[in-house]
Image 1 (cartoon, rainbow, N blue to C red):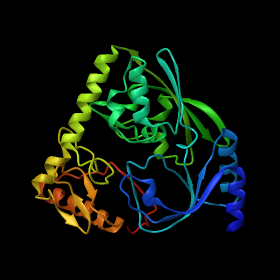
Image 2: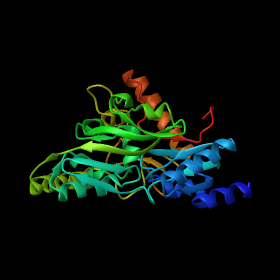
Image 3: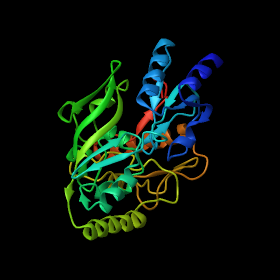
Image 4: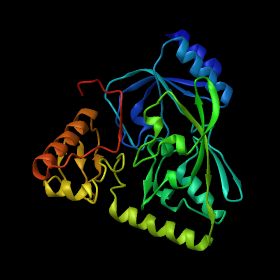
Length: 302
């Protein structure tokens, strides 16, 4: 396998045997065999061709803010775009953004340009590629509201696809069904607004996050999707699981829809707690709680 490392390293910066825990906000996960940081479309194409030729598995990871990785090691390639594909280009109300661009940095850059439409994004620690993949949202807004088109690598080609083709729904996009498609960039449209008002709204929401979310511990954000007309945190509190722990995986005392890592939580502990909550909520309320986070590198039995 050292030949693979050398070939990847010829194409772009490559690390080997890197902890997945260092690539997610939850700080959980085994080791990845290879991690690559392509710095151009040509390098990305070269990496993907090499992966295909050698029948390797691969996974795109941005900031890892909505991701639970298993404790097992991953014998494949992690592709990261946030090191080089991280720029945004403003042209009036139209913005073209590379997939590795920080969503928080973009929201503040838009505010400084007097552009409204991304205030909700200012508290989500993600890349724009990840936001599109999950159709990220907050405060009754989401990516689909501002997106116009996505620049995608698929079937060996780079092409723009329309917003309609992305099949956006609540925390869903077509990219979840086609993980082999790579989001390279996107184009969004914002609206001119009063910079001071935009900044004030972002600051207000920042204060609300600090007061209501357990930012002092690693987490992957909200764990469960809200059922129609209900809040997941209320259901979790209703089964008496506020503060419930399995190992170092704990339901937050501050916000019940956050399961935090209080030190050395394993993926197995975390997943056991998730499944216990789902079971208890089902028994008491007859509701199937669905997870919002993405799970990676788990076996079929887990």
